[in-house]
Length: 53
Image (cartoon, rainbow, N blue to C red; front, side, top):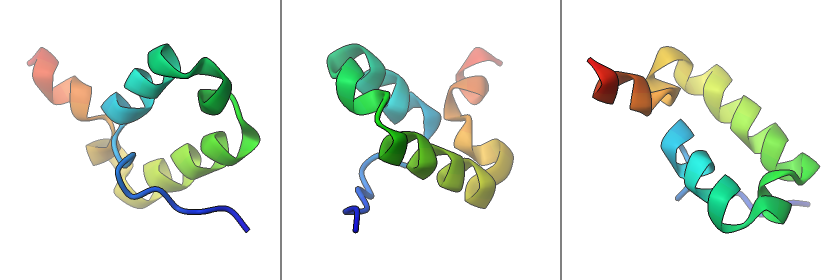
């Protein structure tokens, strides 16, 4: 059973993880967690998009 890390909720957090720990970012459990968060939050998941406007 994987541990749910609530600190990584938005896209920006996963983007930071990709640069700081690529191995963890590419783990199947991390990808599944990211997909689940995106499905739950919808457009709000992509917090960086708001910074662009």
